[in-house]
Amino acid sequence: MNKIFKLTLALLLLPLAALAQSPKEEIFDDLNKAGGVYYAYPVTTVEQTETPKDYEPFYISHYGRHGSRYLVADNDYLWVLKLMRNGKEAGALTPLGLDALARIEKVWEEAEGRGGDLAPLGVRQHRGIAERMFNTFPEVFEGKVDISARSTIVMRCAMSMDAFCERLKELNPQLNITREASNRYMNYMNYHSPESNAFNAPDGPWQEEYRKFEVAHTHGDRLVGTLFSDSLWVVRNVNPHTLMWGFYWLAVGMQDIETQVSFFDLFEPQELFDLYQAFNYRFYVGDSNYPGSNGMLLDNAKPLLRNVVESADAAIASGKTGATLRFGHDGNLIPFVGLLGLEDCYNSVEDPSEFYKYFSTYEISPMAGNVQIIFFRNKKDNGDIIVKFMLNEREIAIPRLKTDSFPFYKWNDVRDYFMGILAD
Image (cartoon, rainbow, N blue to C red; front, side):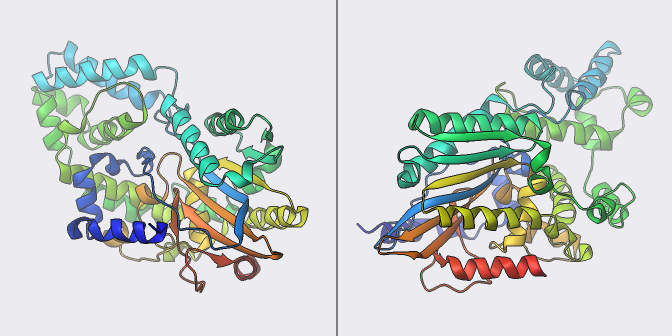
């Protein structure tokens, strides 16, 4: 059966309700998605569109976010743990509060000293992505192929790079992979302009509106009432708003680590959805195509795009096969896919209550999120090159570019489009 037909048939057989799910319904069905950028990489096998006759893959350009990690700092666990311990000592916890404390104690056994580190799941994610890339495009990795791998200087990114490259080397020990994590490449691997830094500063022009939105979407009194039995102790020691966010980070971060504990039962689904909206808001306004930023945040990805074009030009000119692998952060991946104009990655929305409908962090940049540009050469004409784009290993369109054979685009058209972006 033709691969395209099989994929189309599979889509037709999906329940219509599933195809029409709203982001809210998706989150209610899978509370892990309420974590936004904490959403653990969804491993799904999606069949690739059959490569056009006479073409074969020869080069891959990639940018990937680091894999699943622990919460950014030890204190993200510890301050909640200490507060709950104090509540226990004061006899101020309910039975549910005591149970929640026991769970945090268990989590702390694994998390202590690992704030911001790549978790074991993050290693497995990148090994899996590498293996699927190798098996899907084997022609790119045959023989003694030269591959460039670079990461930001943050340890979890370098370790993600190592996990990815080690799996490739296991599959083909002849691969020559150069791995670098250096300040030398930070000017395109993790670029943020002074203007965008000022825009995202604590006193930036959008922060007050966001503060009001967060307050309106954070209702911690119910949660606190289920955890504490002494209302006077709560008045003197607990900020319901802050504690709700503390438990939110714990809850959504559990999917990324090894300890089998959940905190989702402490929340109502609507509460998690409201917190997700606020968290998603910060990434939309701070990294994507929010109208008030006048494009400056997407512009942060221009040095990366320039490197993509230059690296592709060099690969094409060499006549060889190979890959350029890059490993960074959500704050790089989100503006990059927006700048590329990938479908549903560059929407421009003014109303904060609408952000979640048009921008989804769990779709664009889950842990280990990645964009891959696959280059195919015509075996009968080396100058005839087509490409396709994949976001998190799913073929994706660039609506601004025309093609008669989606998901494939003529490289010359894509390159002209990229150069126009860089010239703007």
